[in-house]
Structure formats: structure tokens, C-alpha cells
Figure (spheres, one colour):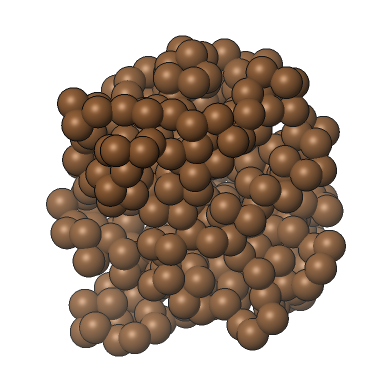
Length: 330
């Protein structure tokens, strides 16, 4: 067996071509992947997957090898017969764990953090005002609009709409803000302008949540959307005040308590945005701060699954738990 260094990509001995695989066991300190002879790996992989599946099906609170992020994701993919894309990265270094990082997944409501970033960029440019009040009618309401449906008489400010969009995922609020930035095309244009050549929004709420297999509309990759989130929060696209506002809206997310947040150690800070849609899709993007000045960015995307909503939440929660364990192990 040869261990591959996570940062250099080099082995301590030599690499056997055609046999490089993700290792389900925790490697020595500073290492992330291992290489086996092909037949040895086939036998070991089958054995480990059987153990993982048995633990998950048995309903254990924490899956076998839960601290190994890759093993947890692989086990859930096997059980659900789904695609799961995961990225966990340290913003201050090249450290990253990624699976299906460059595959497209339905964004569902995770796009709403990017949308409010676009709104704040317009505020910074003097093209928008957070105090501007937007009015609308009952004809504008779409499914799941817990805040906007209560304000048909008086409307909401741009700031209040962003808060409703990010913290409660209010779909009508999302559409009203999309209109303010030029619709799905306007948001996509904004993303291209800040260096995101991958993420695309094509439809409005709630059609954008369809999640049809192979449909590139309203999709991103785990890697691309985290790059953009990091750009918005830590880059120079937004003023410090606007970046802090976006960060606070994400910290105040009120619909993610049972997901990654459920495993957060005391004193840590998380800001996130969730999403759900057709074809068994579930998603979350997040920044995680173990301490001030330290930023990790995380993405979990699930699609092409028959799992019900509760089971998809369990998957996100357990993958999130494994992410926290990986950060703690550094």
C-alpha cells in the first residue's frame, strides 16, 4: 500500500497506475489517499461497503467510520443509489476534500445566497437601496412564501426580502429580488462578471427546482458555487459592510438547525443556505469558523435519489458531522 500526500500528490514510494482509489480508512497525519493493488482493493472495498451499509441500515446514530468524510459519502451513495457532491476546503490553504466537485447539481434554493450577494453589489454601486420598499399582489405569491404572504398590504424592503430569502428561503421574496437584478439572466451575468463561468440560473421560483436528470439549467458544481461564495464573503466584490451583512443573513438561517449546525462544537460559527427540489435533490452551502479569522467552506449536493425528505436530511446531517470531524482532526 502506498500513501499519497494530500498537498503534494506524491507517494512515499511509487504509484501503481490504474489503481488509485479513495481510501475508506483514516490515513496517517497529513495524508489523504491511498493506493492498493487492484484485486486487493476490490476485496477490501466490497468488505468495507458491506460494513458501512450494515451500520447505516441498522439505523445507528453515527455510521461506521463516520469521521472519514469520503467513506460516509460513499456509503450513502451506495445506499441511496444517488449522486452526492461534496467539497470541504480551508480558505487559507490548499487543503480540500472533494467528491464529484466538478459535476453539475441542481442548485435549488442555495442560489439565494448568491442572489443576495448580487443585490448587495448593486447597493454598493449605488444602483439599489436596502430601504427601498417593494410592493406586490397575491398573484405574485408562489409556493412556500411564509414571510411575503403576510405582507401583501404593506410590502417589504429590499433588506427584509433578502432576510426572508436567505433565512427562511421564502420563494416569492426570491422572485422579487430576481426581478430587481434583471431576472435569472441578470443574476447569471453578475456571476460571470465576478469570475464564475459555471453557475447558471435559468428559471424563476419554483420552476427552477425541477432537478431533471441531465438538465444543465439552474445548476452549478460544488466547487464553483463555493468559489463564488468565498469571493462574495472574503473577496473584494462587496464592501466589508455588505459582505458582513450577507454573512449575518447566512448565520441567521432558521431552517438548517438539524443539518451541519447540529454537530457544531461550542464557540464555532456557521452560516449556511439550504435547498431542496425534484429528483430527490437536497443541498447546503456553508462557511464554518472554528475560531475568528479561520474559514472553511462546505458544500453538500444530493440528487438522483428516491429518498424522502427526512432521509435526505439525515444524509446531509451525517455528512456534515463527518465534515466537522475532519476539521477537528486537523
